[in-house]
Image 1: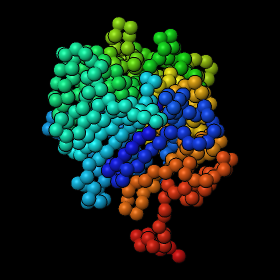
Image 2: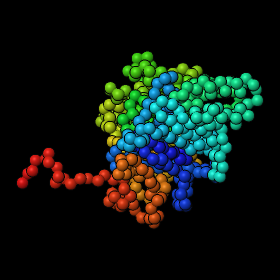
Image 3: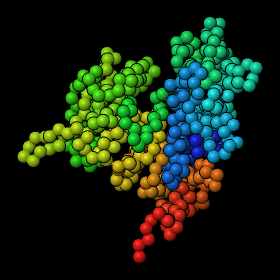
Length: 458
């Protein structure tokens, strides 16, 4: 679970802004909160509203940034690719900062780093509770001894283990995160007790998933229980969402011959086969012809591919098979979301989705949220969405602390605030006030009479 996310001098965010999923004082909808770990709970959902170009997508890009930097690393001597806040010349010289507070494996952690395009300035990991924090490691390039690993070294008594850890720290490139180095150098295989480091890496690898509205050719990896009938899962879900599809058929195909870029297939195969992955399946689509494939891990750790086709009843009897390209945009979007639904109810997953409502009817979006929230009492998964869909903006569905707004100030910097900041009754409908601009986060239009490029018609 994501407890809190802090961002500073990154894309449209200038000053330090905090996106918090710590529940407020409200007692309603208590099942929207995760189980408490050392006095800390997290909300299971959040919806972020804002006008176009307000910074909603930038918030999501920032959340994804750390994941990419940890899991993919950075080549030696190459710049760290990102953009800081560009509308203030002073900020161009300032470092950027990102911090995640997360809940994973029955512990709470604060992990973050300060950086610029050339190097990591600071990096830290603490185990935290509501009232205290315990240092796991810190890194500061301005100290004589850059890494403080005493807490980890004290748990590993063997000299060779201590030396391996210290060697890994010294070998960490200035543009590389220490956690990325821990992952790529296979420190776990050589040091007996680095559980906290592995837990945090595992959260980024197996819990956090970021999805954009036009995510194509991206393997959406998910896990099925061993006895789950995948055909039944897709058929029931597509029927529930009233797609008009009467069934699903999977056709075995030669994985070497499917028209997906080889580097993407290789990445998916490595992820599924890797001993650190919890996922057993990946759902991918071809951007050229919108064919959908399920890549699965067999019991012998080999990989197989199946082409997904939809079934429609023919008048007079029988079925006709369709490729997904023959279905509507909305049906294909629902198809994209089915693996997400599977993993949500498996638990211990965090989904961050930009513009989830693309191509979907407002009633379907509302029902999907209601579906998740009505059945999430014993499920510790999280659903964070940036959206324009105002039908979700109701206290019948969401708590006040689950509704967030992004606005730009006069300097062009994005700022975050929550509906919890406003004094409103629990039974007040907020959608109308939001559209009227009370909570900000809506576009401000100019005077149409001042448009000189439009011909005047009398």
